[in-house]
Every structure is written in structure tokens, then in C-alpha cells.
Length: 91
Image (cartoon, rainbow, N blue to C red; front, side, top):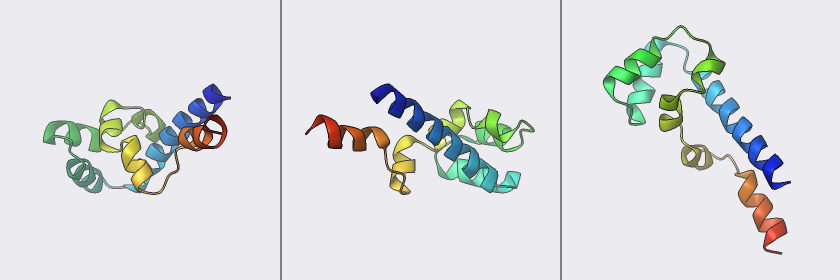
């Protein structure tokens, strides 16, 4: 069950990164948001102007650096692995 929850959480984080990237529609917005989250100019410019699809770009290391797991939790996403461990393993 732990492996299933871990895989589901990874997929959910990936999907949320994709939706956030899709929400930043214009390259100008993408660049500005990437810079705000600590990505350097060259990488932000390259990724913001990329013509690759949302799903493919959401797998990129730069997106993972900008939209971290901790940032998703801060924005209100609940970590399923922590919830599972709290409920079933600590008894």
C-alpha cells in the first residue's frame, strides 16, 4: 500500500505541475514566474519559450526546481504518504 500511495502522490504532483504550467499561458508570465521561484535567466528563457507540450515540460528538472513538493504543500496540497503514515503506522 505504501508503494501505491507513493506512486499516486508522484503522479499527482506531476499532474499539478502540468496544470500550473498550463495556467501560465504566455511566455512572459512563464518567464516571470520561473524567475520568481529561483530559476536563472537562461534556463527560464529557454523553458518559457519552449514549444514542447505541457506534459513533457512538466517532467523537466527546471519545473521541479521551481515548483517543489514543499511549495505544493504550502499551496494546500496534502501529502498522502504523511497522511497514511500518521493514520496507519503510528497507530
